[in-house]
Image 1 (cartoon, rainbow, N blue to C red):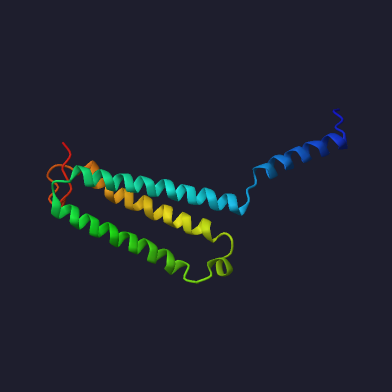
Image 2: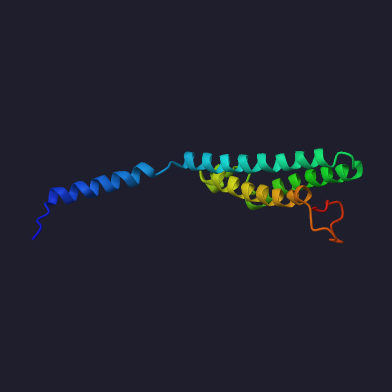
Amino acid sequence: MIHISKRFILSVLIIGATAVFAQAQTQMQMNKEACDAYKKADAEMNRAYQKILAEYKTDAQFIQKLKLAQRAWIAFRDAHVESIYPATDKHAEYGSINPMCQCKILEELATARTRMLREWIDGVEEGDVCAGSIKSRK
């Protein structure tokens, strides 16, 4: 029969608990991680936007309409987040978690917009009669 001392069991439990607490994050760290993820998604969206501007630069009418659409999308993005968190004093109303929550929403929106913009970069199947200004893949 194996004899395990109470001291050994207690030591294992303490080490396990210490490992769990070592991985715990502060709200400030979670806010920063969420906002860093949003910044990364926003930068990716902006790279896609800039690539479209460069690839389609000879189509002045399209560029003008794309810029208009992008400004409208940014206005929508900001208004959408404000509709979810309308209070003036967001910290008092929604707590210290609010920056994390807002950044998660902003990241999701930026990622969705990047998918939309990528259509102009990736193109569509040749013969897609609804493609409009989106180029055909070759």
